[in-house]
Length: 244
Image 1 (tube, rainbow, N blue to C red):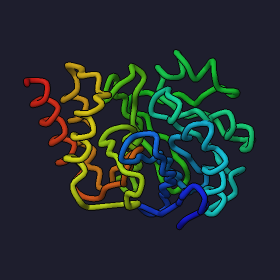
Image 2 (tube, rainbow, N blue to C red; image 1 turned 90 degrees about the horizontal axis):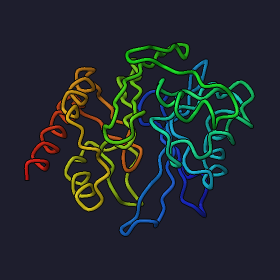
Image 3 (cartoon, rainbow, N blue to C red; image 1 turned 120 degrees about the horizontal axis):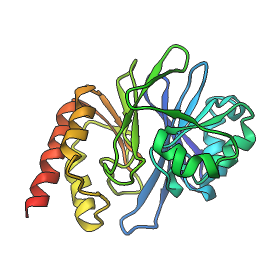
């Protein structure tokens, strides 16, 4: 559903109760998208805020599904403008909301920058949102940033996977079952944002073991299918590239 015709911002349900908010931009040749994910429950969660300049568009999209004031958690994978640039803007309009992040992010950045103390999650820790529950995975340096981490929503088996599988295009479908590994690896070859940690395979294997069936990508389409298989294929692709 288009929520702003001027910007092309839209909101679409990609799994039960999980909505992808996407704004297309032309900052990168070929187009690009900034996605946020809204989990609607008793304690609603927004994962990624988008850059601060997109705050009015993201807020408008959330309002099509629920009052933005109901937000309880504003989550991020790592500290970067498209992850949390609008964090304090959301805290200002949602009076009971708190930042949600990993312990390292809370220590090195969020605890200082955010207008409210963060709820910091440890590796493997779960958090109830009401009917559903999310689990935190520490993923240091995968794909980048020491404080990086992912959230897994257990009811729908949706992995909020941050910058993994980033693929270009300003007009990508909300959700797809088509290949995203190929396009994401082409994108990475042109603008490599991976840290190439020696623990990359082990980290991706931990994510794969959760057996996600939806991958909620921050840039591009969300993806449905055998997420464990795709995450292991990504590990193989990264290792092949590192050997070349």
